[in-house]
Image (tube, rainbow, N blue to C red; front, side):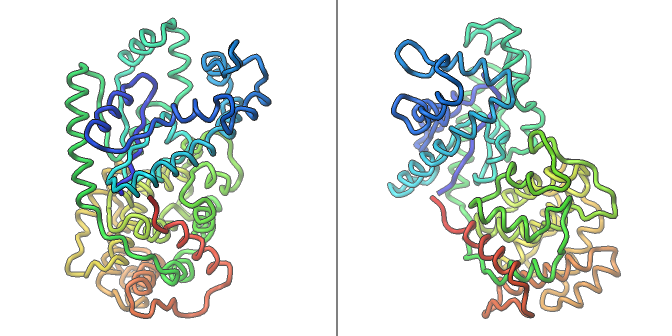
Length: 428
């Protein structure tokens, strides 16, 4: 079943788009409505929310007054984080239950509508992320009209959210809802058609082999950007059941504060960049979604942006992750299409891919069964010999009949690999 995340800024029109997707026959879920349910009297989060924020947030009938609570958390980032920590786990559990029920009933698409998917760093749990966007002045006008508030209050709510231009960077699909309602409706109809086609053309999802991940961790790069080593990435993603950007942020060294999408910094050229994580990200995406360049690039771009703001390094990492997924996913060398992979990587990073990355991929393609040959070819062409060798080793372990990772690896790497295999297990 295709899982779609639908998000956008406040008053941008995503609820209208969701209604069109529901009319197209897709399963849909409004996470804001679910949050209402879990905070209702008797709901799983009600007592904790009242204990944390006090009875002053309650209406006369004992329900949580959303406007009172909203005013508090929009003005206080720490309070907002407290509320999210109380509510989000309960909401996500309900989402999992309903998605599983839809899949069991034969549903082919399930759409989750949530305003803060990217801000919460949970957007990589979806096969496609759709961002509904709206020009700033129009967004302000709609919010003032919809909520009957003044412009000052409306601006405060908009500014409390992630800037729209930055949110768009993490989207597979952007739907511009700045125009007329008729134009938005037409865009939603087109979106439904595109999603239907994606569901029909779902790639085959191979079983991810532990040996492939061990090979990538053991013979590929060992160190990663800002302390986020490949084995740490695998272990954290495995423990969470998927990439959670706020959790991965806590692995960065030195420790950082603020939202995950604002933590990236320009690393020195001598430091390991996000390219070091490309092999494990590519393998995880292969096991989770199959050979899907857009899905892989989206996962790698978010991982890169977390740690490093060099767009050329993000572009290189995206290409290397796409190549890993394709080559480990039984793409024959003759059928490989590095040009299209490079185009996808450049589009995500909004930057040309540096020559070292295609050189690394080309070396691996020319020496698919020869780690040493791939490393030497990459070195001679200005590529990365360690990444080339690791790519070949991982692809060989995933595709080979025995799936053996070769020389014995440290126990810690094997445990991280097992955790990542679990994270890539089938989901509804």
